[in-house]
Image 1: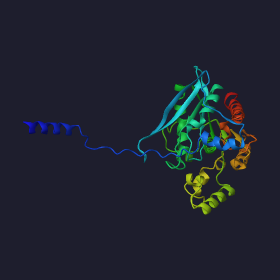
Image 2 (image 1 turned 90 degrees about the vertical axis):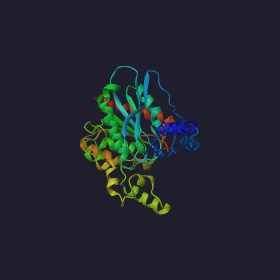
Image 3 (image 1 turned 180 degrees about the horizontal axis):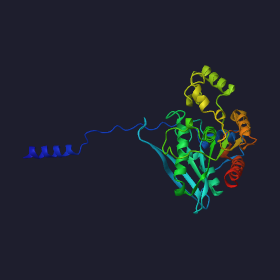
Length: 336
């Protein structure tokens, strides 16, 4: 009797033991070195007068957080969602939208870096959308570009839900995010840059670009030479070459495809450059503006007289940055 009872318990227990235990997917690798506060430690050594602009939700602005805009069923890290946050005036009116792309050298940073500016721009009558995209080492070019194009399509598809005018969508970015923003807006209508993300039948066109200290070309002689020199001295690729899949001589198609100056057409969106006084972040800007002039497309350039690259994190420079941004968006999206 006792033996039969024990056997029955064992059998019953076996019924509840899964036949196969799924292996846990590895976590997405993340470089967390680039933050507002790591930058602040460096900046205040030379500019002790500056203060970080904190995230503060203004009165009359509401937020939708951690909204999924696309999903990947299979990645090396298991199923994967990408997210946006959405800030908008707390009323029923329809507004233009601004997708905001963070910087961090294509390998670090996250969308929270854009939140303080997003909150303030939303107060000025915009739906602002900091966006997540895939970074090194999870993915190389063109994954991040395709993610942003997908995000634009998602915004347009969901415009009624979030009170967005589908014909007035802009994109902005800082540093590496500015390079992506410029490429997204310059390549309106380019099938080569579109990717195969969700909602492929929805347009990814944008109507304006704001580029904050981001390059418009990778293929300048100086950029190519600097990357080769970096590799020769250190025995490893610079981050831009890593993102593009190798040195220019090994991956010329990616270097050219990711350079906005190579893709200007009559369909490219108007652009506002906001730059520091550091020339390395002006690469390709003047060439792109000359090409725009040839097509009669509006562009403008505003330089902030400072030797700090992430000037958009700090008062007083962020106040000037917001002023240029909102004035340009009003001109291109509200006054047409």
